[in-house]
Length: 434
Image 1: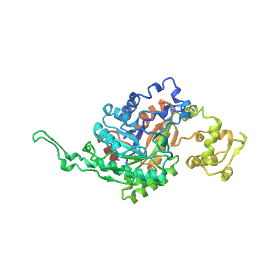
Image 2: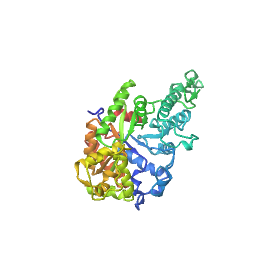
Image 3: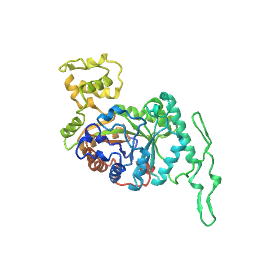
Image 4: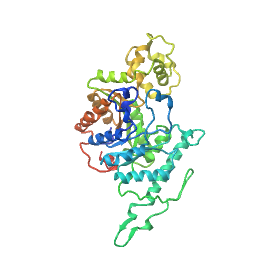
């Protein structure tokens, strides 16, 4: 059973519709990738569709080999990019990404409150611990997962102490009396913890409105526990509805353990959308976008998902459920479940399995089909209580982005599952509308 009346929907500003082969199209606009104009256009259109927020994921390292074929993790700084959208939009939320492993709370607290003032309460922060990048910050190795999440929890607590240290109520700006601020209300943060010692106060007052909503993206036990304590939104990888239901249950339990209402933690998986006017068109778009994923790479994806190595199997040999029983431990069991279900449903040879879209599945929930298909699947997941919304990740070409914004969102609104207009001015207000 769903926890909310309306979907919460964001749009990823990572141009996934240009990844793989998408950037090679004549009209892709890839030449403007490192400009603010690229994101401004998407944000304006997302706001016209009344989306809750735009969101820029980020990474702290650059895997260079990927750049041979696509732009990979090469991108503008997310917070600077979101700041460029402030004057170009008026209602949509602006969610940036920060690494608690490689940043300092004082710097981030100041940046986030600056963004919140500039946007009049529309800032949001995606808190990540990072999986790589230590070599760029003077660390010989990545801290353990436990260390990263301990630091993340303290990082958030320190930032919140800094935001509280200079309350909005302290601002008087009384020209008659000459009092600018009531300094008795401005107090040191005095944060003393395992990782940080911060005196404070912050050198910018708190914005006089709702607090800054937080997003979190970790799926480990530590990540789920942290989400239960601090997150308003969770950006998750849920390849199938069963996994989504399990993740939703884990988040509910974590929120309850932290003394919070489970509905206050919104599960928003990334949703990879390959959309077309027909299912065949969408499928062709998907396959064309992945045409440079060669046989060896496809075999590696199956090995990661199922724990079996098809490298020496004849192409015409059938792959059966019995073959999967002797596989090694899988690195990507979520993807494995999709392939296991496929193999159980259909009699496929090795060559046929390697050509299926399921083999090339995104790390995110994926819909390859028409707008009707997307509306039906999203409605099913939402009504089952598997999700509270999603972050749209269009794929293949700008056409998927266009269909998501111009047809999918209006259709969800017509069905009563999404807003038809904004009723609030801040990101927190948008989140509370449902």
